[in-house]
Structures are given as structure tokens and as C-alpha cells.
Image (cartoon, rainbow, N blue to C red):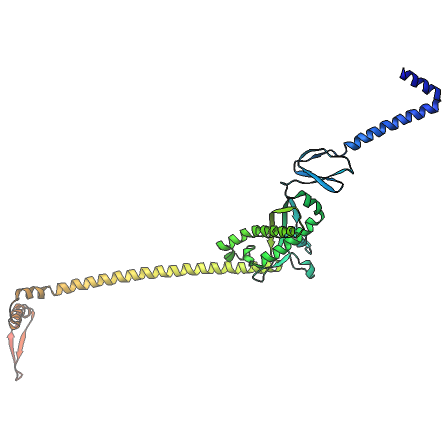
Length: 348
């Protein structure tokens, strides 16, 4: 009945009235669709590595992790998507690369403009080292991070540079990078180089916590520090020359030690040979002496208990016969010079 009456009313108002009625209905339907779209416009799908902060009229109402987020439409509620707590966000320290024309070659050199040498640090032994660094941080307080989002990167840059200056000043060059292998290979230096990143990490986090204690909470925590230390190109060439000279000196020392060991071994062999010859000669002389004194020792045993005059007489009579037998002729000369033949000698 009502539909029939509306049709009759439309026929009664004429074509213009029908156009206005259809336009009104279309606008009403469009407004309804727009209202529905506006109402569901603030529904978000939060990625797995992100989290969302819901702000209602400037006040944080809730923080939600990954998943479907239902929020009232703007401007009632505003959704700000932030990195998740487990995501590590890299931050290269750009100030360390200022003034370097070709950073990919790692041939860093001092710039004539001192303001562009911020990447070079002074070590504890008055050397100069260049650091190429990248920080990796995580969001620990999303509300504080959202508030300080524009200041996080500049603040971390300054905090890391201050920490790097302090850490480098307390170390020598060999505890930061391998500059002199003969020194840097020592166990203590190796341990100090391995602790460099962890010391920098603790120093940066300590400064972040100190900043939070003064009301400047960044809502982050640094998880990792990647470092690529290097020395200026001119110093690198000098260290290469020192390394070459050191290696040459070590090679010469090794040759000298080998030559000295050869001489020592030859001396030991000569000593052993001389000692052996001396011992053999001594044994031979002792044997000869024993042979030569054997008859005397035997005579001493035979004449044991006799007086000295009797021993001499015995020795004389034992030996005189053999001596006279060997003599061709024996003459005796008296005090007057007269010679008398005692043994005429063998007949010819």
C-alpha cells in the first residue's frame, strides 16, 4: 500500500520532483557507504616484525603486537606502526665517513679540513685509527621511541662517537687492529681486540641509560656493534715497510741461528773426536808403559825382601850377560889410560 502511494506521489510531483528524490536517495546511500568506510578505515594488519601504538586525542591508549588491530577511525584514534621488539635496526655512523671520497677502497686518509676527520680517533699510544661502524638497536619502550623517533639516530651517533673516543684513548693501536704482527699476535692483544666491540656496546648502552635517567629516554637498547678499523693510507704504507723489514730481519736471524747451530754441531763433533783420540793415545801410552815396566815389576817381585845393594847386584848379573853378548868388543880403560880388552868379540 505504501509503495503504491509513493509511486502515486512521484507521479504527482512530476519529472523534476522524481529527479530530486532519486538524487537524495543516491546521496544518502553514498553517505552511508562513506560512513561505513570511515568507521573501518583504522583497521590494520600489523606485520610479524612490528608493533603498533594507538593514540587517542594525543594520549597513548594501548600497544599491540603483530596481528589484526581494531581501532576507532581518525581523528578519534591514530595508529603508529613501529619496529617490533625483536627486530634489529641498523644505523651506520655516517659522521665517520665524512670527508672520505672513496670509502669502498678502505684507503682512508686525513682530510686537509679538520672538520672532516671525525672518523679518525687518537689511540692511547698516540696513533691514529679510522673506524667504520654500524650499530644495531632494538625498540624496548615503544611509547618513548615514538616520542623521540626523530632524535634517535642523531642521539645514537653522538653517544657512539663519545664512547668510541673514550675506548680508543684507553687502548694502543695493536689492541684495535693488527698493525704490527709481531706484537698484535700476543695472546693479551688478541683478547683485547676481541673485547673491543663488547666494550663499545657496554659504553653506548651505559650512555643511553644515563640519558634516560635525565629524562631523555630513547626507548631503545643497542644489541650489536660492527666495526671495521683501519689506519690512514700513508701510515699503512709505513707499517707495510716496517713489516717487510721485520720479516727480512727475522729471516736473517733464522739464517744466522742455523749457521750458528751448524758451527756448534761441528765444534761438538771436533771436541768428541779430539777427546776420543786423546783417550786412545793415553790408553796406548799406558799400555806401552806397562809393557816397558813389566820386567822391572817382575824383578821387584822376585827381589822382594832383598837390600838395595843386593837388588842392584842381581839386576847387574841378569843384564850384563845379554849386553856383553850383543857387544862386538869391550875394552876397559884404567886410570893411566891403558886399554885392556875384556871381551875380544866374535871371531871373523
